[in-house]
Image (tube, rainbow, N blue to C red; front, side):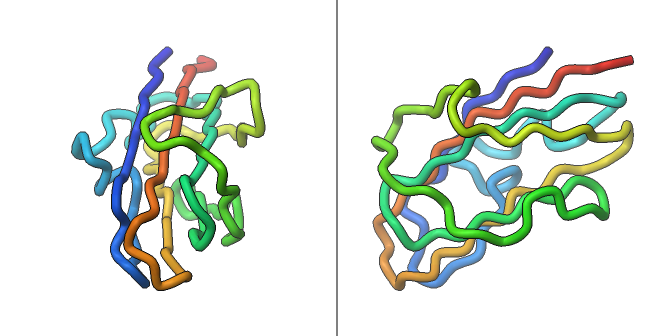
Length: 119
């Protein structure tokens, strides 16, 4: 089981980012799924104006939708609260697309991601 805490601070106004490659800590180590796994992910923003889309391999797991605001910068969401959970095949690559749509450059995004192999 691998759990990562990712944060992207101060998204530029009207920008597109992939949380798995652009996080403040660098590229995520759980970006590449090596074995069939259950992926559980909770993502929150510190303010409104962010859309989220999650893809695994060629599949859209979570279609583009508005990301919930109200998170505190630096406080990572709990996986038991409002998390997405999906199966990913070995060899798939995760993409968490964040788009800032409010024209404000002060939004932070925090995510907790857990990847648990099932086979």
